[in-house]
Structures are given as structure tokens and as C-alpha cells.
Length: 128
Length: 130
Image 1 (cartoon, helix red, strand yellow):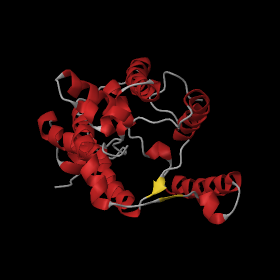
Image 2 (cartoon, chains in turn green, yellow):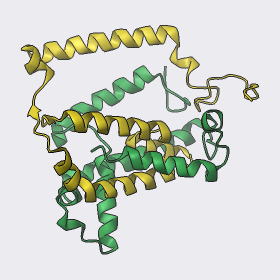
Image 3 (cartoon, chains in turn purple, green):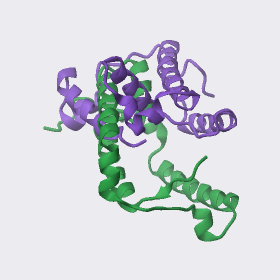
Image 4 (cartoon, rainbow over the protein chains, first blue to last red):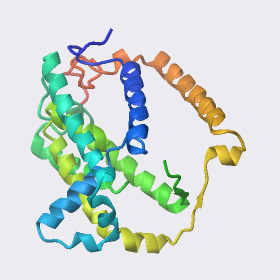
């Protein structure tokens, strides 16, 4: 039986739990669980802080304000906090980069992995 | 939930770019934050890249949309099949559950999480790859 001290849960249990979260999400926000548009919300707000006139671009203006956008920011912040708490509860420790990257791409240091990670994020996010 | 129009070119090209990004990042937008919380340093760079990508796309949204100039129809599988939504949803769930059952039989999830749940499938670390 999975508990909070497990290092990993069965993906079937975790998947069912996340699937059930769709119900309160639909009832409260009238949309499905999501994370990607939070990157637009945060990015546009940061650009605005630096004086960029993002409000003139409709795509940004549509994502910058209101509960419809900010609840996703809260979701992804909650994901990070939850992952941190879960790691502490299970006593697991992560290396700076996953050993998977040395096996698949020969990246053994953060400086060799970081550019690929950045590029991956850059290509992944215009998918809102 | 709003049904979005079907845009063949944009959907296929965008899907391919998304797939390349996810493979290089080793994460989707949501799991990026989970990796940060779990302590992976490279996930911060995925986050930075993602914010930069979202900003870049935002400025290019107008020109890109104009370039494709696609007029899509809003449609769903249920409408195409002429069946109620619940029937299509149940059928899809059965097919997907069957696929997962086959995959699970081939490779149980317990063999995939790795010895320290870091995805390194449990092989000896000094495997003679080179």
C-alpha cells in the first residue's frame, strides 16, 4: 500500500489520484488540470516588470490576469512544494542531474546538461 | 471545457516540436516543477527555457497564425462517430487500458523506476557501453 514515506507510488494509484483531481478542477475552475499556460502568465509578468509592453500583444494580455490564469501558477507552485515535501518524507536524495543523462547523452555535469535542458524547455512551451 | 478547432498543419507541426522539447527536457511543463521540488538542478534551466519559449512564441503568435491561415472546424470524436460522448469515452478507456495492460506485462513498472527511483532501470552502473 503506498504511503507518504514511499520513494515511488504505483503509477496506477498516482494516476487515479490525479485523474480524480479533475473533478474538483472542473467544478471549481470549469477547465481541465493544466500547467503549460502558467509559463505564459509568469513570463509575461516578468517581461512587464522589465518594462516590456506585453499588454499590447493579445496572446499575453489573454494570459496575464484573472483566476483563470493564476490558478495554474498556484498548481505548479504546489507541485514543486509537494515534490519537495515528498522527497523529505521518503528520505530520498537526488543528484544534481539525473544519472539518465549520462547514459543517454553523455552529460555528467550540470554545465553540460543545462543548455539541452534550456533548449528542451524552450521548444516544449509554445504549446498552450 | 471549450472545444478547439482542428488545425491540421499547426497541430502536427506543433506536436512534433512539443515532442522534441519533451524528449530533450525529460519533462513536461508540470513535471518540470516536480523535478525542481525533488532537487534536480537542471530542471531550473528547463523552467528558464520554458519561460523564454513562451515569451518568444507570444511575440510570434500573430505572424505564425497568419502564416498558416488555417480555418479549422470545431469537432469531437463523438460528433464524428455520431455516438454519445460517454460511449466514446468508455471505448477509448477500454482500448487504452488494454494497451497499458500489454505494456505492463512486457515491462512491469517496478522494473522501470530504477533502484533509487531515478529511472536508471537497475542495470549495473559500470555497464561496458563504450
